[in-house]
Image (cartoon, rainbow, N blue to C red; front, side, top):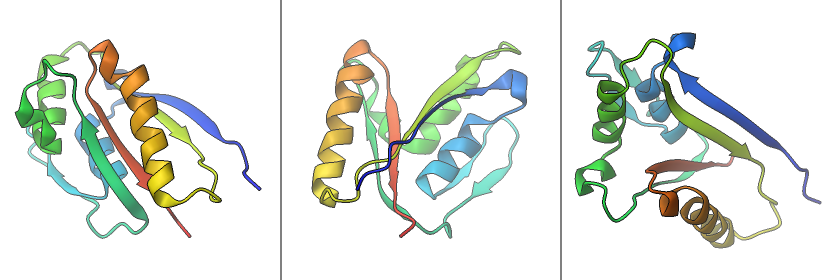
Amino acid sequence: MAIFHLTLKTVSRSKGQSVVAAAAYRAGERLKDQETGEVKDFARKHGVAYREIQLPPNAPQRYQDRATLWNAVQAQETRRNAQLAREVEVALPQELARATQIRLVQDYVDRNFVQAGMCADWALHDKG
């Protein structure tokens, strides 16, 4: 039986957060933060079953690269209180096949973010 879980958060400069670090963690990847020069390495993180970047038609295709996308966001949003990203964490029913879970998220992201002109970077985690 599915257990409902939904958490909404923001990645914000006022909290001292790095959107590049957040993206590296969510995707389980190694990304270099151009602003600080630090490398955020979560490549050994287990449980990232799928990751994808969805872009609106007017977005540069180079934003398909996670490091390029999030470093561009950090470079553009320079205010001390800038909200760099939104995080939506949802528990999907484990009874659904992985392909169905992916299609559900792709559709949700497209309708709620991409069609509104936003770039969306998302990952599906399965901790077993």
